[in-house]
Length: 182
Image (cartoon, rainbow, N blue to C red; front, side):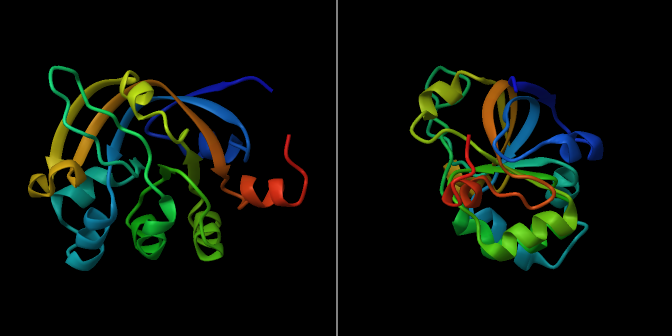
C-alpha cells in the first residue's frame, strides 16, 4: 500500500475509498478552526451565515497557526482533536466532510463520522514548522478577532496525513489497541 494523493474538496467516492491507517498526501483548500470557532458556529443558530456556507463540503484543520513573519504561514501543527468532540455532530450536520487533527476521538464522534460518511485524518504532531512548508497560501476568512484561532483558508500541497477514522468507523487507534496495526 503506497501513499495515496487526494485533492479537496473530497467527493463521496474518495472518502469511501479511504481506509484507516492509510497514508495520504492532501492538496487543495482546507480551513483552520479550533474550539472558539466551533463554539461560535454551533451556537450561532444561523445556518445561513457566510462562513457556514463557505465550509460546507470542506475539510477542517484543528490548528491555530503562529504569526508568519515574512513566510506564507507560521508554524501550523495540529491541536488535540478531542477538544472539538462536543461540536463535531453539529459541524458534520452543517456539511463538513473531513477533519484533521491529532489524537483519539470519542465513540460518539466515530458514530457521527459513520452516519455522515465523513473522514478524520491525523496530522503528524510536533511537525508544525514542516507542515507550514506545505502551505502555499493563507488568508483569514472569519473571526479575525480571535487572532491565531481565526478561520484561515489554506491552500496546501502534498500535506502528509494518515486516515485516523474512515467513513465506515474503522479507527486506527482501536485497531492498534487490538493488535491489528501494521
